[in-house]
Amino acid sequence: MDHSAVLALYDRVMREGALPDGPGARIERAGAVVRQVAGPQGWNGVLWSGLDAKGADRAVREQITRFTALGRDFEWKLYAHDEPADLATRLLAAGFRAEPEETLMIGEVAGLAPATAPPQGIRLVRAADPAGVELVVDVHEKSFGTDGARLRHQLLARLSDAPGTVVAVVALAGAEPVGAARMELVPGTPFAGLWGGGTVAAWRGRGLYRALVADRARVAAAHGYRYLQVDASPMSRPILERLGFHAVSTTTPYLYAG
Image 1 (cartoon, rainbow, N blue to C red):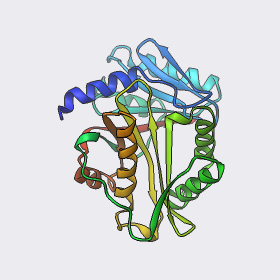
Image 2 (tube, rainbow, N blue to C red):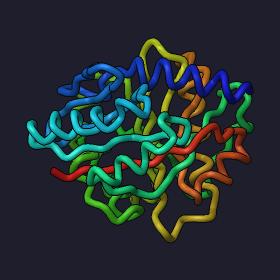
Image 3 (tube, rainbow, N blue to C red):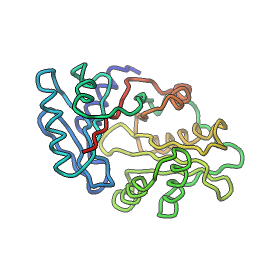
């Protein structure tokens, strides 16, 4: 895979040419910045910027003004290759707070490792209704230790208003949800995004994460997507590399609370 070419394609179609990530969200293009504005339960933030040193500070102030006027906290999703090179320092100086860095990984669906079956005693089921969403949220809260209210709202809205753009899967041990993940299918692009892969503590290290990736890769292939994209944690990165994903950049969320 040509890393530079794929990264340039990703920047062009998934960031600069971004589509809203759910019902009620909209994309705004303001000068050299592309941002998403959504309701309080949606994702609000900057997706792409084409800034230089001269205009960066002004653009940062403009985003703060825009989102605080709406009463929204927001995220500036900064990538390591974004310009200017000191944009992270400028964001911190403007009052943003950095979250842990993740690795942007991309894999060609056709070149990924062969499908991985779930561990013995586990079955994978689609979460396509409110009951299924509750199973996904339950795993999310147990795996990551964070409140799942926003995820619940987003999944229910997507499944209701744009069901062809999201796939959610739950791993069940009997009737107990022990793993879950979702995939966002972005219409008109070659990219599908893998998100929220979580496994409860007692089931980690048994291949469940790999099985959830393989399951979604099969769906992506059936829908004609060429690439899978993941923002990988340090724990996930080596697993994804073994499956055939490539690290093409890093991304850090910079959060601003108005």
